[in-house]
Length: 260
Image (cartoon, rainbow, N blue to C red; front, side):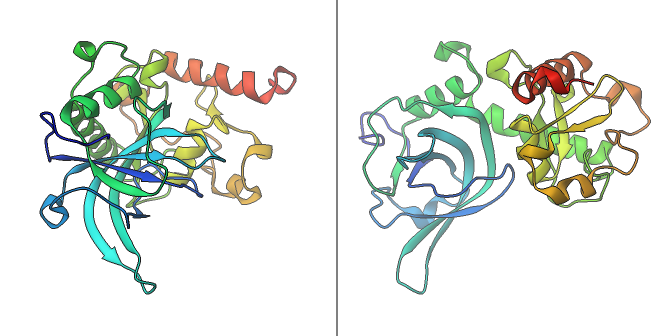
């Protein structure tokens, strides 16, 4: 079992879910946990939670890291676990151990937690991986710092937002760095679209959108200048090499015939 004893710490949790919807970076979700085996859930508020998909029709594996916000019971009597501050992994991480066949919340050992975080960040050896706490702290610090730099304005729309998050330009497992210059401050929806290479940033910071990969009204939310919204301090601008890598992935996916 993913969270049985043998030195397991009760500070970490894992939610296995038959996911039928996309998750949003920085968002919060309720997950069914009727068959949960985790202990002392009322005392676990603020614990770190790995979210894993067991839905056969979608990408299975570990998907995100979040914060446990407690359990609730809906009108139908179903027990739901609240997970807040979701931080999506660059790509789903394959299961290390056989997952359960039903929605559940379980205890997660420190060792397995560190393994999952290490694999999510592209580390093959656990000793090379930053601790999960360090990862979470870094992302929160980047979000707070970018929010200050951007005056809480999304770099895609240049509109003030209370939900902006730090989104990686080049995923760590693809050679990106855990440095603030490798992140953009984005609202959750353009953040997810950016991570899926549905839009990218040109050499002069122009925004390039694949209209076939987005909702039609997304184009209406692009910064009116057509450029990535950046503040005046050049030293705080995003890493051009990381943006060039992202742009290459965009055109590889979008098709070279559309390259301007």
